[in-house]
Each structure stands twice: as C-alpha cells, then as structure tokens.
Length: 442
Image (cartoon, rainbow, N blue to C red):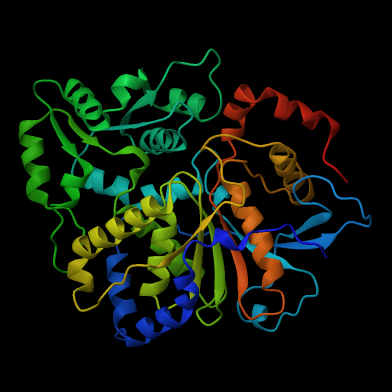
C-alpha cells in the first residue's frame, strides 16, 4: 500500500522520541493520592452538564482500482459508530489500519468542541464573581467569539464581540452565529492590532460610570482557596455588588487561560474510564492546534492521571517556538493557580509533541483538493471536517494509523469541530467549492 507521505521533518524535536519513557518515569513517581487531588480540583460547577462524548472508529481500506485521486489517493474510509471500547479493545486484532475519533464536534450545534471545553470552567468563574457582561475579540469568522456569544446567552450573560475588519455583505458561518447571539462590533485592523487597549476601552464604555471592569486573569489571580484551588474569593464579588451596576469581564482572544485547561482535563478523566479507553493501553492522540491550549491541557491531564498517552499536536497558526512558549506559560500558570490542590507534586514541561502540518501554509489559506478531501470524509463516514483545522488532524491520524498497525499503541483523533468555518471559506474561495458539484471521487 502506498501511503500518503508525511515527511520525517514534520516532527519538530527528535528529543521527544523518548516521551513515553520520560513520562512513565514521572508518573510512577507521583503519589497515589494525586488522582484524589485532581478529583478535588475538578469538583466545581461546570458549563457542560456532563463531560460525556462519543468515541467512534474509522477504518481505512483501499479502493478496488490502481488509480489515485484526491489528497487521500486510493484510500476509502468507513465508520463504526458504536465500536468495542474498554477491555474489548485490548484484544482486538485488525488487518486494516484504523483510528478512533472522539466526537467533541457533537457537543453543541454552534459551539466547537475545543471551545466548549475551554469555557467549561471559565463561565462559572465569571458567574461566581457576579459578572454581568463579557467582552472578547476575534476575527470576522471567529469560532471563539461565536462560542462565547452562544454560551453566554444560554447562561443569561451579555456578550460583546469585537471582530476584526469590515462587516461582510452576507452574514454566514460563525459570523452569523455571533451576530444572532451576541452584540457584534467591527473594529478596523489598525485599532485591533492593539488588542488590550481596544478591549479595555470598549469594556469601560459598557460598564459606564457606575460599573466595574475586570480582566479574567485578575479573577484568577484572586482564587486562593487552599482546599480546592481556583475558587472565587467572595469578597471581590461582594465588593462588586456594592459598587457596580454592571460588572464587565474581559476574556482575551481564544480564551487561552490556565482555567481553560480544567475542562480539557475533565475530558481526559472521562475518557480514561475503564469502559471507554481505560488507563492501561498507550494511545497516540492527534489534536489540531490553534492556540495550542487544548493540546496542552490534554497532555497535562494525561500526566496528572498517570496515563501512557502521547499527544501529537499539528501546528497550524504559529511556529514551534510560539507553541512551545504557550505550553510553558499555560503549565506555569496552572502550577500557580492549582497550587493548593497540587502543592506536593512537580509538573514538568515538554508534554506535547508539536508537529508541522504536512503542507505548511499561511494560516487561513486552503489548497487544491482539500475541500474535496473534506467532502470524501463526510460522504464516506458522516464526519464533518474543515480544511483549516480538523483535516490536518485527520491526515496525521491516517498516517499514524498505518505506522502503528503492527504496534501496541492505538491512534485517537480528538475532533474539535470547526465545520461552520466552511461557510465563511465558501465566500472567499468560490472556485474550490464549485468542484463539489461533481460529487466525491468513488
């Protein structure tokens, strides 16, 4: 079988080949009561009622033809919506390459899975401190802005979304969702370049003379409960009630704060249950990386829970140095904010295997064949993918599933969502979408 080539240079750091051995040593040194400490840390109010998600199986086979077409060549995909999980996976022997897919794209019709996980702990923090309004920003087709708008509206909070650039002639995709659920203001690119100044100025205008403004990071800096960690000091909430009619909270672009890691760790804990993925088998997880927050949280959760899981994150919006810096910052902040619950444990950096996309490009651009590749996936499996994010994760999962066919580790892709972005892309790249009229290659 001729595989779709994934260059060896895509793995940025050869040093991380020893990931499993280093992590297993670290995990074996953790005290047995660490899981209890994590449970206490996760004992809080959440945005999502339950952390549950579906796990499905994708099997790869060859078409009965020697002709190659599209980005997947002569490969076919099929789906098992209810595969064997838990202990049944341990004895499973397959002749065809396969990978599992965590369907976080199904958590909400309008909120991406990774955004839902980020906001899972964040919004209750704001509510506990009596926040009334949330201000954030993003691009015109920002999935983050749409997620904030929908999630705030569902919880009775007012959202104010500063979107970069001009209002499009036709509202569609995430832009339409943001406009339906939140208060959208389009900001010239020259002003948007100074994000903090822009956000603060707008938040002050919303608060008015009797209101108050606080950055979400300021709220986190006030969480000092020594028993469970990250619980809001009621003195701040009480003071705000006395002095302010509106309490406006600023959430930075992408919500890439340490608290966002909690929702992802909650997901890891759910998946590690014995009837789902369990704790014993090694897995190669594949995650598409925007800010890198989800990948960092997933790898951190695996480490804290002592799981032999490796996280491969496809770099899509930044360089290796940028992602590594983000990983280091998030873990450092998490150590500080979660210190009361994890005071006796040492958290290490270098948790994520950052991987280049097979065909690097300027973020937001699409290449020939990618839209029809998404069409093939949807047509053969019913799984929606987008060319900016999740297609890259799917490609790496396909590559690793071939590589791991005769080895012990299984491949799992975390499907973060992103399909609403197709509507915005269809406005910009009409020629790519016109090819869909011919239908997917068979």
